[in-house]
Image (spheres, rainbow, N blue to C red):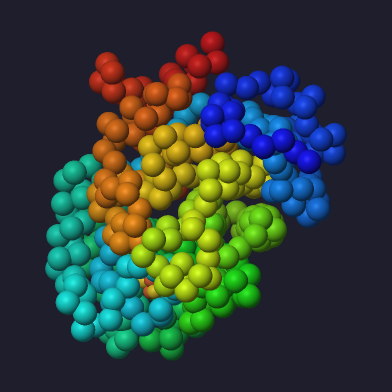
Length: 412
Ligand code: SF4
């Protein structure tokens, strides 16, 4: 039986050294980890070896976390990135009825809303004036949406702020748009791209297993549909993020299979920019009230998912993001020390997690991010959506450094 870790012992993993912890690991698990540390490639692990990592406890778990942090330093350096963005949910009216969602409303509910195109454009203008480089636009799926609504929304935002990167529409919204217009998927995506769509959030993935998906939402797009939208988007030159929601009705084997599926897609298309584990926020959801889910992730699960992602996705998706909205400040820092290298967006407003009971707030300023990152001894840097532009930000002396300067200092 692996020994139980006390919470303080678990949280002290960042101070451990791999060579110190390695001799205490189960030999097979240590060999798996060492294989990935050496090759920096998660594809070297079999399904069974990956599942064994996902089941790690006690010293094995500490070893996994320490190794993930080491691998992160090698693959992503000591920079922690973030993007200055605004999250805009254009409506909370939705007919899909996902049981994990506390955000959606029926059209007649008193707090249902639907922002006009002019309001959406205005919000994007405000974001631009505030220094945002990206707007992240998603919403509920209301019945009877105008046929070309998603295209028109892009046009409204893009004509108001031509320089803004639009990161918008989940694969579920894309499937709905295709349904509304009757267009072939690729043609629909090309049309959106030509009207200003920059990248697509890889949300609506939750767990890519139809049995679990059926528990979460009987009306949601299937695993095959999600994969088809993502593969087609990548083929159309639209990059996407990738996500996984954990802490509800799934098991660690689902995490492993999903990460392996994402690797497989990435090896074909190269279109994923990052992987974002999303902890289930249970408080105000039907899924929890109907006892179909556990009470969200434990501390161990939060840390383990991020560490596992770093190992299994190594050499495939090297940007692992913490979703700070769903974690508190300390936990987000711990996850950054368990394999992650990106803080996501400042967001400005984030309605979905807040409605479900998350308490991390609606906005983290760039200065807050910088302070949180410096606190754990890493280097803050603002990035654009696709990580193609990274700018070091050191607030203490208010000086912007170039990446080259920071790397020089770091590796001198
Ligand atoms: S998660 Fe999205 S699709 Fe599902 S009910 Fe909520 S708003 Fe609708």
